[in-house]
Image (cartoon, rainbow over all chains, first blue to last red; front, side, top):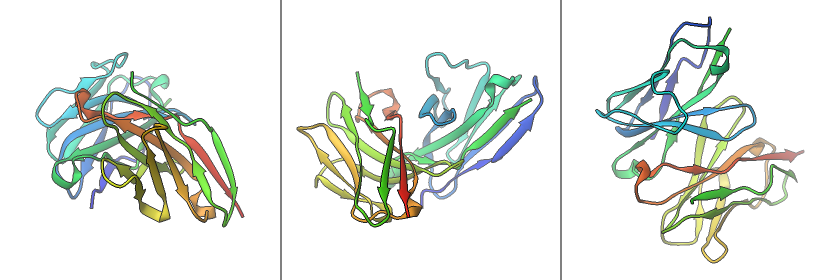
Length: 117
Length: 115
């Protein structure tokens, strides 16, 4: 149980384009999803927290108009990087937390490597 | 302010020897403590957690951790290391209050198990 998928695993795009990353909880309902960014050999930086059906809560310094988060269902959240630039290149990881037996723990997706040329 | 410290950037251990990866924390209230492991270019995998109850927690892949309230520590241990345990290990903490119960993360410890 507690499987989280992310798609795509790797994306390369041109500067100025938008990229959408999907995060799905496959075998539980995710009432809360988290989006992280990780730079090489560094810890996780929380970007935002989203609760199903509500607007995402962004961490200080994260541009909400650049990193659009939608959590429209209990199994799917999306992160859209709008007008991507090379400095947005990074490893993006989502996690999901549910109810019941899944209420205390965040379960992570495999990550998406974004490269902006 | 809540914080997590992993004092060692890197831990090296010989295969078959016991390993310890250290974690100390600072929170107000009762802590919820977690260990995750990350293999190269992968997401994080949950290893174990302490919420309440027995101070010694057993988790996946033979790992265990001991909650020590007086020392505010939650060190990860394994009696006999495997080469395949080589990875990046993260300790995290939260309390059951506010802030969407988000996790506070340590900076990670790179474990290298030598054959």
